[in-house]
Image 1 (cartoon, one colour):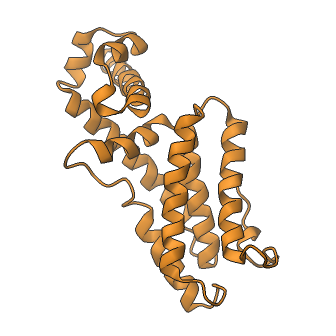
Image 2: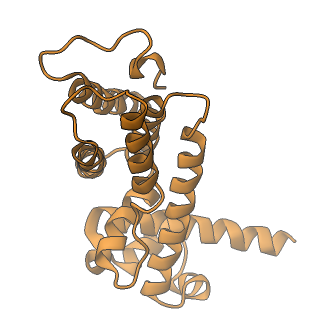
Image 3: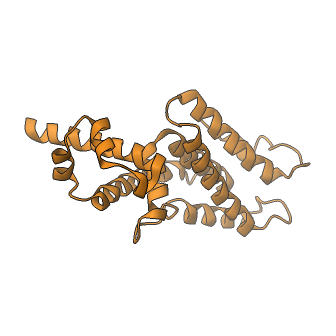
Length: 210
């Protein structure tokens, strides 16, 4: 049991160190030697847990996708109006990107490693469905195309990924919280229009972002 626990801790350290490396440098730029140094383990320990670099990247993607799916499930609250749920979904995805290098590495690796999962799969279809529901229930202002709003949602998530990577996310909780607030503020501004009134007490802003 003790040996299994030690092996699991080693695997976790390797996964985190590799995620930091691949988040910053990508799949091709990542160094297994630097990963071992960061994790404080030998190359033999790395290859015991992950025989190839491709297997290591696959493990990061699996972990990242699990984290994203868990966050999405927590953000979807049937008791809220559709746009309230979309707002929470955006905050959840954005928060993960700013806090977790495994999730950022997952987003990058699914573009760089052939035959990988699509990191948008857990969050983009639910956002589209909620936005379509919002239109059918009269939540969208006239002239606002649900397809355009879905595209905006995706662009905000892509932008959050790039910004989070560029500002060394995860080192300051306050920075991550403020970044997510800014992300949601942009979403709110687009919903209301650049010259329209602010969200009402019953609108999307009613749900707090933490």
